Length: 124
Image 1 (cartoon, rainbow, N blue to C red):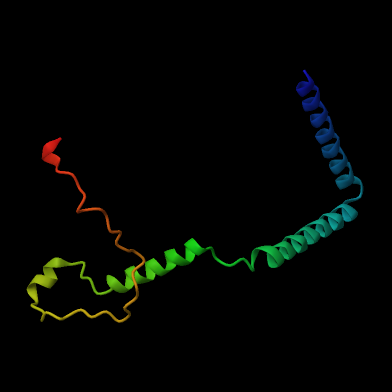
Image 2: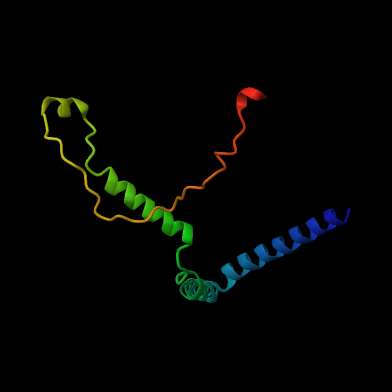
């Protein structure tokens, strides 16, 4: 019941605001348009200030940098692949050794398990 009263109150306020805007538009058009332009200019200035102060200087996240690095590696790896196999089969090309330009440490590592202590599966 309270929600229904609140809804009607909101409808009345919005209706009065619409009536006020329409009356000001027809009675004092120049003042209404200048106020509208000022409101838009102030809103744009506030939005630009928030963007330049808070949002623009954010550094990309750690995951974004990793993703961009992976994309760059993938592009370097598959740069010279040939999409048309029929053309590749017509021209014999000499086999070339691929060499890595940058040898980086892998981000993966081997975890030694207890292989010597593993039970015989046949005894189960």
